[in-house]
Length: 228
Image (cartoon, rainbow, N blue to C red; front, side, top):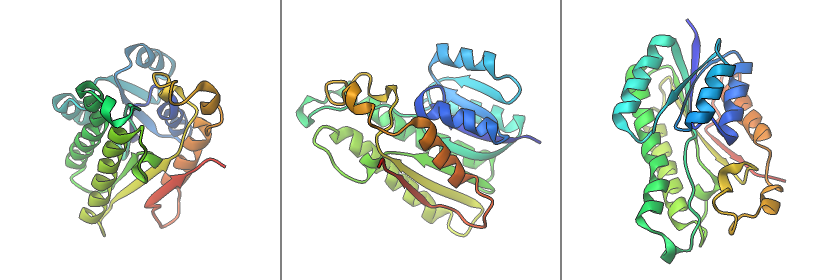
């Protein structure tokens, strides 16, 4: 039976690097993303060790159906909750649409984790929640984004308590700035020049994969990744 890693938001940026490196490590990757164009291309390129599912991780029915289908493909070993969108504004500039956009990542993390735990019968699973250094501090232009990341951290810590001593392992990942298109709609806040000084996504992905797939009898519970 094939060992499966589920990656949300695996069509771009850090998620795409995680997808590629997971296949290199011998995993069958099930990628969940709503970027139709990128997902169709990935489905064409990687056929033997990849299957893309196009949809919104904050849609509960879609996630339920998708996780069930994935569980029939092989043995789900790892769930990587990576999908999310930012909104960088001063506190008084946030609108309802900005808030909804930020909270979709938190909602999706909870739904994907819940449904995967159900099909795995709450055993033999690693849940890797990729958040941000925004979950560790506040910032005047990231108020709502930080709020969702702090929520994701709270959820991650609660899962650790709930499954302590079991075969379900929960890992929190907190990377700093990564040079991807993540900031493309926020160039007034993070310029291209500034983002070019950020970490390379392939380096961050390697650091994550090395830690979550090690052969040692241990689990890296928290991984903070900062640029030099």
